[in-house]
Image 1 (cartoon, rainbow, N blue to C red):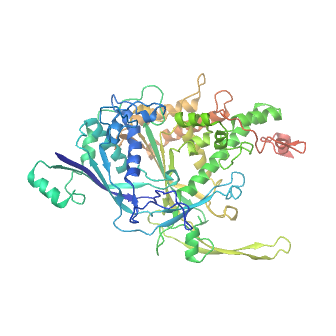
Image 2: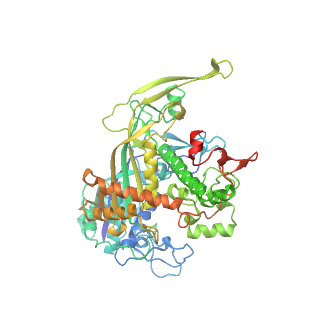
Image 3: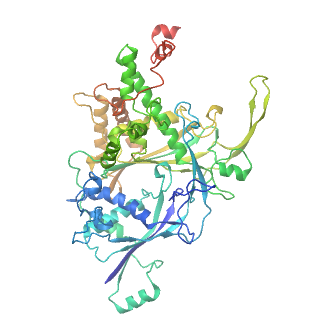
Length: 611
């Protein structure tokens, strides 16, 4: 009998939250602990995160089957796909004579020492004012394990796991973790749970040999021994045949491509993302978020803060384009309103009623009958959602876009400034009693940002490009004190990488049927030229990176992606149409006998411009 296991060191690149759903006076959600109070990552959380990647990769293997987990959830048949061979049948059958139990045993990942926990705060952004959503009371906090915390990963392989394809899938899946594309825990789209997998080794012992067996029984499993193969993952991946192209239409859950955008976010002046706990420790009314509660800890930009700004600005862009489309469609105000209500691409996710202005997709789905909601849970709700909820996620659909916590750029120094603030009495013109506060702020910090998106669609990339352009141009700011000039940033040192399993997986923009577009045609030609260039490999993926020699190709691609996004919003025949038509909006309305568009036209003619 052979004993096989995989060991590695899991080091957090961003804070981690594996919640319990239990809150205290300290935090709304505590991190997971065992019965002895030790902090850990449950083996179930690790297995679930790894299985999610394996389930999406498995269909790309030659002659592999699609897991039933990716099909309609009313399927009750047993599944024998490669992922289910590793992690156990997703639909186990009691009367099935075949053993479909898991072939992998995941141990809880424990800590060698107990780090100092942090409290992470979160708040929703009001879509109208751009400030904290006070009316909806979207405020929460939770415990997190800090960046740099290390765990010991232990996976034991069952002796029944002998299929070469299944072992290759396991290696390909672990390669994703090894390449830094793995996440675990909760709130991963908002920057938590990213990690690096280091010192991976594959251990294989022949327990039929007496001396090996006696050593194993005496010392126990060799978790800490350095006796395993360091290159097992590479050897297994090299034995995998060429990944074939997807047949038919691309299915989102199946792995095809990913994109990583890395850049330096450089503040022009004062910058502050407020941490209530750090403020209490420092004695200031406002203080920045630090990587740890320790002397000398460096500040960070939370992924949730940047993600919230990106979504808010993206929604503003989309609704502006939809407003222009409605305005240009007709001269009748009622018809303009109807066009906007039927095609608005971005809801307000903080609203709770369908009668609210630009009501949320979640509020409409909740108004459905139980049978209709159950059906959506079985087949997925993406087609029922607005474009913003599809890209950034909702309560019914997870996001494929992850915005990690951004550390301070290496080699840069931290500069703090203390500022005092005082409110002015609107009647006397003097200072207002009791309205004084102070803050310690960062002065011109530079953060290294990392965005990751799986299976990006051309219109999504175009939308993100427009949003990042606005952030670079000063049309969106991050953190505290936007009205005071805080949070203005520029984007520097850009790095873009696309990974593809097959050349056909490259996110090329496609023209609308029956329409020729020079920008899209140029983008397609540029994308094909990029695919022909030699690229490095990362796991199963071929990587294509931006460099100065391919600036023209990437510019043409970006222009094509933006063109596709504009068509999604502006094309009256082929563009986006809402599944649930809005009942109210904040612009195409009539108040006191006047239409707001008449007072504030979407477009100005020459006479209006002169006036």
